[in-house]
Length: 544
Ligand code: VG1
Ligand code: CO
View 1: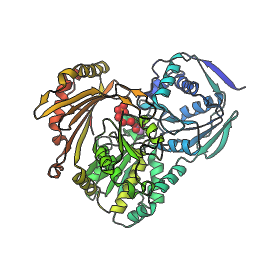
View 2 (view 1 turned 180 degrees about the horizontal axis):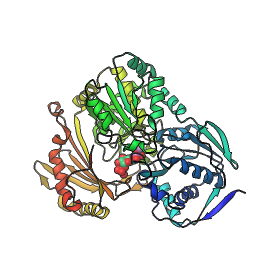
View 3 (view 1 turned 135 degrees about the vertical axis):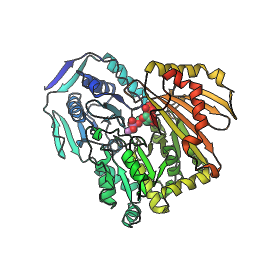
View 4 (view 1 turned 90 degrees about the horizontal axis):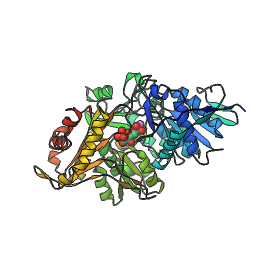
């Protein structure tokens, strides 16, 4: 046999966060670090032998060597077949789709999503289960437990596999198939959306778009779908070539990290529609001409207009949003008479609701929107959904949003991130906030009074599993809300996220600038948490 069993020492820091294990590349490059985690995954999966896995990543630095290692280890651990995206590329939603379509046992995604890449950047690895979705906490904690005790891993002594050509190969008894990363995903999109209507819009000469792939994984998907299949002008997709360091950028589609697209959309003769996706293709940003659509509003608008798209023509079973996401979609759900769920942050919490058929659309304030078509959030899907709505309604992005607010009211919303804060200081800030609950309850801040404060805890309505400590919520009598959370995806110190929301029914006030409209609440949030005193920061690193 060509299988080697390698003695190794356990690493005790391999605890998956909000979305898989994310660390600096240099951490992953420590001896056996990647191998240990992969073996911990394989050891924790009951029934993996003889089954199929899907493997791919966002193309960042270390993607290729990691895939080679995973293939050799999969062969040594009894996997029967692995599907790999050509050049090692597969977007997160495309992996989710392939797992489902090929009835694979699961998939491994190499990505640190929106975190920067390159030798000094971040790398990540996450495991997705048979339904195509991120492993739930029961699985990720089993993997972590296993990693803490690991003493050996198995790997096949095989040469590297050619990842760049479509076709079949193998290692030992294990078959490997290199597949086109785009084709099956594009077919799925064609089934969900009215490609004819969108093509007519693009070829009318009255509509232009810019899509920023941020040199990350969605470039090939967007070029094939938008330009080749839908007839958008060449050059609609910018930064379309995946690069190992994302061209030095931060592949996070927001107003701060996508400055090129933002400048185009705010410039002279701006296109009608702008969009971007993140490193692994599961996030999206939606822009109109000189107009930004908050992800929370985007979710609400997709829900309100869902039946326009053929894939959702029969209506929605229900909707779900993460707790910090604004309640804009709740109002739509109420109007539609469908269920609306509030889950902890992270897509893994939507899986059970989607599998049980309780919800059709889900979303997070962090630029994530998706549906039951896969079990991940899906950036291009959201962009195509918007295109379908634009093609049918023939109004501008801004008009669609303004009219939505006129009907439902506007949930003013912002998130302030304080990145790379001292980890102890951040933890203490959260602890103190919790200690202050009794004192905060009922307290008055100008015309507002604190109605409730708690640490969000969630009981999954399907399997009754309980997740605690999911973020501090402070709710006011007028519906305003402040949420504090520590990020579970960062790799340096701690990132404190402060989420601020205020509902405004009066259409005359809907055109206010967001930071201005929320200025009061923003300063209440800073006072309550004694943010500057406790973190040494007086301004956020990123505002979305
Ligand atoms: C962030 C977002 C969360 C999202 C997660 C993964 O997590 O807030 O909504 O699901 O990233 O997105 P955190 O713990 O840093 O707040 V991605 O595009 O990295 O897979
Ligand atoms: Co992502």
